[in-house]
Length: 374
Image (cartoon, rainbow, N blue to C red; front, top):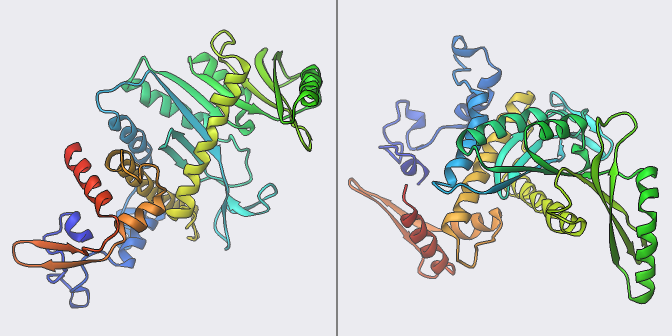
């Protein structure tokens, strides 16, 4: 089936050059290994390293696919979500380090999403700041997007690991808005004390949790170059106070503190579900090769798999009962199903079981793809 889908004229592999390969339609594990390891080989001079990978083209590909998915529709605003996560390692891979927060040896990949669409998956060592390299990735992505959509409004969103002067200053200089979480400190907590007292009074009138939002202009003593708008959430839970802070370039006359925190900032949590889909359902953590660059290629392959399933969900499953299905659900219920495949001289016939329980969803997806065109 895969051989016929990629256009092979001999989908059963009967005409393979070497006898031991006849009957195998697709490339063997050695060829796939050369594809992954070609990036660290000696180039064309090495007979076992004949594949080359243009990293810049790969990076452009993810953004191009996102832009092309919109067709002629130009969005008024897009939000780019940034996040770092752990990729646990169980061997002595190149670039492995112990990360105290995750309590394991791991890589620390950087992901950038726009909604459910993946724009960047960069494998990194774990002995770095969570924001390391994010400015360079944001610069190239924003430049590529504005090359196609010069008038689009772009926002950045991330947790406190990305609240860095260089990134915020770049956004302010390039008309990119941002909303980042902020780690608590004694100065911020003192500024939020009046709001916490108001929240505690509300708790006495009704059951917790209660929230009160407080605006303040804040600047660090040494690292920030200017005052910035900070919104504090004074929340009282049954177990006690739970203060939180975000820093933003968005003006208060457009978005009040409650809207900024609850509707804009908290929505970034959906990105974490997309990362889980890739890691738990599509083998993004299969970084067991020794060389870090080979593991980057494996992460890219998993990322492309995610892109295909995300597009399938967005285009083929829209309006069906699986419109919000996870990638592993799609694979299990719509792709990994039994069929009888018959190959003749003129055609390849696929017969699906009449008792297949998701016939209506399968037919809906087929019809949607046919309407969408190539």
